[in-house]
Amino acid sequence: MIDFRYHLVSIIAVFLALAIGLAVGSTALSGKAIGFLTSQEHRAVASNIALEKSNQALSNQVAADQAFAQAASQRLAGDLLAQEKVVVVVAPGADNVVTDGVTTILRQAGAIVTGKVNLQQSFLTTNGANETTLTQLADNLAAKTGLTVPTQSQSPVAGQQAVAQLLAASLLDSPTGVTTTGTTLSSKSSADILTGLEQNGFVTVDGTPAPASIAVLVVPGGPAPQTGNQVLVGLATQLKLASSATVMAGGSESVGSGSVVSDENNSANPVSTVDNADTESGQIMVAQALRYLLQGKTPAAFGIDSGTAPSPAPTPSAIASSASTGKGHP
Image (cartoon, rainbow, N blue to C red; front, side, top):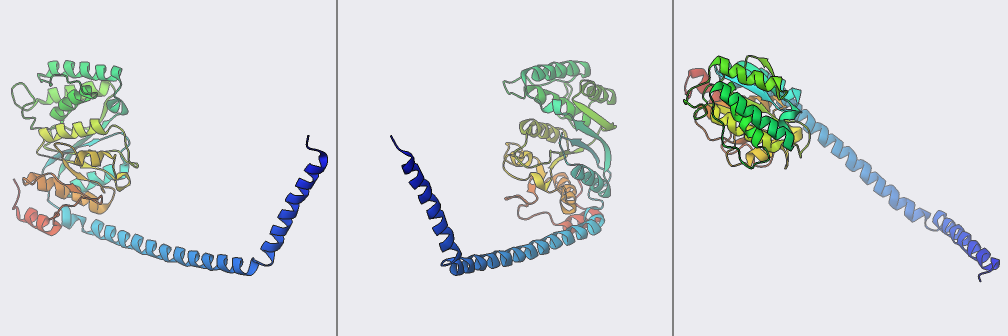
């Protein structure tokens, strides 16, 4: 059995060691240790100051670039989309800066924005009950309007795929192969589809978004990874099939693997994408990308993420020049 004296000696030894350590640290080692730490502190402070200056310089450069883009937007985008009818489809969680900025630049480019369709979160929900509801709704609306929807697959988003096809047909005026007759939907049929989707809580509609010839799909903001990517990539495909040109636009905050834009760029049948449409230059690129598609160019990725802005990238002066002279229009 350990007696009291053992415990007493142990405690005294611990405190003695602490006292010696403090004494040594405050005397013998103090000069060298403090000198070293002070030197490291000065280096860290100097490095931090340099980084702050560099960051401020880069921020000023970006601000200047965007100010230039804003001032030159009419010259860079003017008449690129003259008299083209465009519908804007907005996903849940999309950045208002992107939506408002894209809508503004489309109008500056001469486009007629026929309306805006806001997808609701329920459209992105992929549980069994919601898939059944969407599938039944698609069948009912197809029967009512004379459309055909694809045979239901085993995809976990089969309901959304069916509804996306109907939605694209109702918004755009060239739904080749969608109707049973191969013709464009009547205004009443388009309205019936939108009303049915709105009454069931899957979309809200601003304006009268049908018919349009081109589409812009604004995807969620916030950092990647994001949710609903598979649904939105499928919707982009349907908009592409039913339109003369479709562009997916997102904000620079959401750039990266797992984002909707990234998944779209890696899909089998991608549309053109712009991943920095929260900036003036990115918004101008949305209009330019649409013009490129109308001129028969292949869909491409533009923006700030790795692999975007392919070579040769759109040349604003060349596009603006061709638009102002009437050349290059379909």
